[in-house]
Image (tube, rainbow, N blue to C red):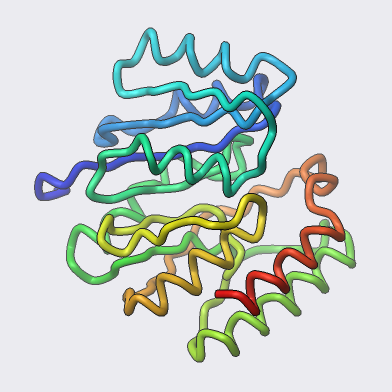
Length: 221
């Protein structure tokens, strides 16, 4: 099915000791390597990841001494990865491990170099300012790319190793950076529908500073 291609899943995690287990226990058998990067959590996230690594040899637990951001954790994960296809997903359960195959298959079949899990569904539960910021940032990225991408900010995505960009951003602007860089590298970008699981408790993690970081990434890359 995967034509001998190795699949790595990288999971940046910050204070997710309660939700991370539900993600790790559902990782599909075809995944060869799972790298959990604890981004300086103040709870037991690393202990959870370490415990899973002792039961499943595919899982590696890495701990950063201090919180340095999602992009920083993803960069560290890449440094320890060996897969031909690299998948990124969040640790909080908003991405379904069962849908990893949907992102991997287009790359393995030779139809894409980067695959984004596009979330489609009712966004009315999200705060108005978050909906507006998503609309604005998405339109700006489409103008930058000169191509249509429905869900530019989805963190559930897969890359062929050859088109995996070098990450420079440290925080949430990383998704924008990677998308722009992959497009500039000539990557064939495909979107596949994935489930939309909204968790209001995550909203506080994205702030005004992240908006300015996004603008900086848009201008810089």
